[in-house]
Image 1 (cartoon, rainbow, N blue to C red):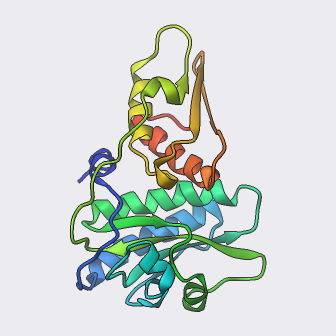
Image 2 (tube, rainbow, N blue to C red):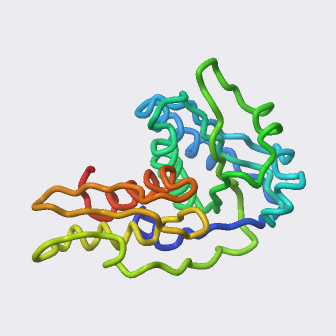
Length: 219
């Protein structure tokens, strides 16, 4: 599976079967995490065979079941923490999809206390969102999207690469499917910004990564 196919096929999955992730798949995913950490300066960690973060009341509220693995997005408490965690977290989520795994972005409906006990958080770092990880009972369902014209601003002819980028961005997961972002094309320059709403900065990082993959352009 290539990454564009992963973008189209990846949907949020909350319920997982009782199946361990094999060592080869874990190694490939860890290699991607290491690459993201090296590039970003983050301290993202894979937690395997540890169900406690998804056993409490919050996980039940979030309708999660069978979650025994997750990706913990840990990094320095910088101003760009949220956006970078979205960008690199989604990069890892798509790699997981390419490896035959399923994921779900989780901001609040997990036990943060249990997760903090399972990871290493250095001074000056914090734990943000996590990604539930494993083999889903289903492959999830596609989310509805706003029209492209509601999510971008352009003038004149719109190049094909920009349309491709927007189509990929429209497939990106966002908190409660709010899609609080706007891309602006001015000449050959693209900018993207969050337009408010909870976790919209995390969402901005996610949609930026999707846009870059779809368009072949770096923002």
